[in-house]
Length: 297
Length: 335
Image (cartoon, rainbow over all chains, first blue to last red):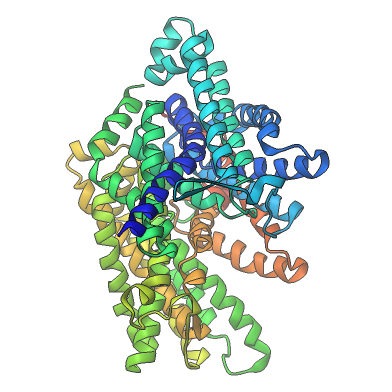
């Protein structure tokens, strides 16, 4: 009994640790959807490219991914902004299916590109502390997960400060509410869209950088699965608030961890897929309301 | 868009199109199946037709109704597994199980589609990714969960040998049925309803189109034929495993072919299948690197979406009516 209880507490804490990473990768998706009403299917591709960039930088400079995130995130801000200007902007007025297929194609290209350059081997970044753990009572915590959680939390707090405190940040939030009204009061909607897509990509880049510490990866895995998890999270948490995204990240991570602890490890991913479909179906009111706003916009 | 799609298609007449399909089928059926020098031709023909069946089936829901499904591997795998199980366990001739496999997948698609097709915008597409992957994981682990041998998990099912000639004729037959179905749907009231949903679901609903029913029906027909392709695969390949049959890469291929070939056109999926089956076969045997084709198809997808939304079919339409191409609006201007 006490055994099970300890394992459940462990599941809670380890869910909290993963939630920082989940929230970082999902909030980029939510940000881009909020401003542009586009589902960024290339999010996984950006995470993957960021992970490989981190790997290469770690191998050449020896710097820890926790430091490299300061380089990688701005780099993928630029990548995202360029992607928006060159490709996404052309379809921003078309039907959702067009941007979906376009970004899906972009994802395929990124994946094939990484496979051709880096090969399909499983990689990972392993700094000195990777196997160290800390004991709190009966609960065991890995250092790398604690660091990733803290980094994710710091990034989200900084983002929130930016979105609330700066003119550009407020313009992004305003655009998410009403694009036409923004244009009327003189907001440069094109430029703000570019910044929003760049920011979303920077968040995906930061998540890709951080996840090298936690997950082994190759050009395909675990990015496709993570992509789906971020869909689940933004669908579950709503697209408006950072709190909702953070809470949904924790809920999903907890559901997964409890599945692993109390049932079977193979079913971990099944949970998020089932949650995704069920939430989409059971809460169509919330989603329909969101998309009705798109029609008016 | 309907107007444009109809105008762009290089064959307008229902009867003429069916005649073309039958002629193609007669030529394909005339390939000698028992002579060794034609074995490779038979193999490639199977590949292309198999792709064309799936692409044409996907096009009914994805191209006509505009609901992109990223989870069609679920139906492909369902078809293959139903046939494989019936064949192995109950010794039923695999080709006779085609309708059963199709109906099983159609039933599954109704269960999945009835709630998810109500979703708007990109949410149906995202839900189908979830459905596809959940199905794969479920099939991989069901033996483990129930403690009984049902799907043999990730190890897969080995099947006995089956006469490739029979599979060849069956594949040609299914191809003909799929093509005629897509032609009839597209030129009929059903298709008109689907295109109306594609353009504006609310307006369609208001003008009396039963949008929910039409979408679910289109999804079910699509799933039915995709499952038939799965059955044919089971009859030909003698081995099934969840990673191949339910894999996300299969779902991707099924999307790529109609989009690159020409979304919502009758012959687009066939062009896509030719590109995919024929060209990929050649590229793979030359480079042995599976990611080069993926790079090419990904780029093609991006270019098609940006510059020629009707894909190969659109290009052909442009070539045959060069004058009209100038007055054709170049890009969708949706409000």
